[in-house]
Image (cartoon, rainbow, N blue to C red; front, side, top):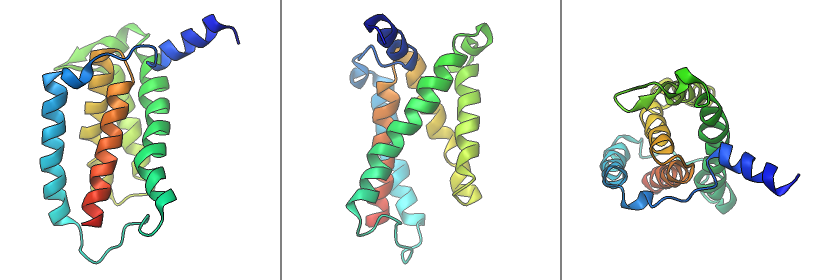
Amino acid sequence: MTNRVVIVVLDELGLTRLPPFYRDPRFIVTLLAACVVLVVMQQWLPPDSPAPWQGSWSLLAAFTLWQPLIEELLFRGLLQGQLLRHPWGGRAWYGVTSANAVTSLLFTGLHFIHHPPLWAASVVVPSLLFGYFRDRHRSLYPALVLHILFNSGYALARMA
């Protein structure tokens, strides 16, 4: 592949720009709200149910790093990026584009395969937030950082 093709592919995935999303007040509020939600969630988790990664650093790394990376590349990078190319994909209601809504519905739907229904359904709001920041900054990096932090927070809540 030529350098031009690589740049086009990276741009399509939202990986060519690293915007200063960490200074975005909405991004900061999202992180703070996630902390509150994770503290509440930790109170609801059954105390005697071990996390699937307990005792395995490789499974913990997969859950907190590799899984978010792969999911964000596929859903927010590839799928949402492609849907945004269509005129209807960029239409937004209250800051949520059609591309984000479709991507989030598919992302949430796939969580029903391996998770109880209530936990799977709870993925829809974080998914919409990941997509919102992907659209807002035209970059995959904010969504990737949020996803890694959400999964890491969930893992910490399970360990506590």
